[in-house]
Structure formats: C-alpha cells, structure tokens
Image 1 (tube, rainbow, N blue to C red):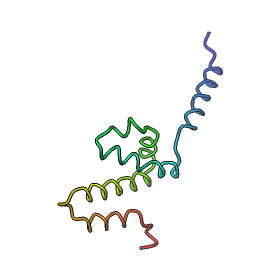
Image 2 (image 1 turned 45 degrees about the horizontal axis):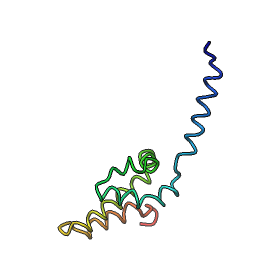
Image 3 (image 1 turned 30 degrees about the vertical axis):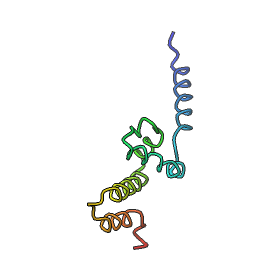
Image 4 (image 1 turned 90 degrees about the vertical axis):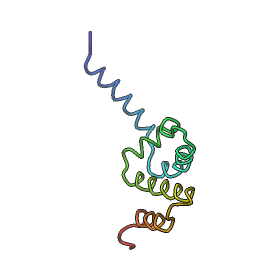
Length: 100
C-alpha cells in the first residue's frame, strides 16, 4: 500500500542530497575557467561539468561574468575582432554600477 508520508520523506531525502551537489558562486567562479576551456575547445562543457552548467543557468550574475569572459577570450582568439570594444563591454559588465 502507498504511504504518502514515507513517499514525502524519501523525496525530501533525495532533494536534500541534490542541494549538496549544487555549486555556490565562489565554487562556480573557481571552476568557470575549465568550463570556458571546454567550450572553446569544442567539448560539451555542459556535459563535462554539469554543476557549473546548472549554476550558470540559475545565477544571472555568474552567467553574465561567464559570458563576458567567454566573449573576451573569443575576441582575443579572433584577430579581426575589435578587442578594445570587447574589453570595454567586459569592464562595464563586471564593474558594479556604483564604481562607474
């Protein structure tokens, strides 16, 4: 027979385990360089580093920093890109508005 309370307890335990597997912003920042390297080398970074991928999906601030870093690195690799413009956009993204 189905016991709703046991089911809720099991689901709660699974959810608690999942929480442990999530990254915080500091951990994501420490690992994002590897994620970017995987992206730039053509690997499936999301598959290789699912916790970083998940954090970037849910955290807009880290996602913005990741995007700016990736854009800057791609610009450096592409000699035809206007590097000063890319670096200026990067600076505006990572500098808090009160410091501008």
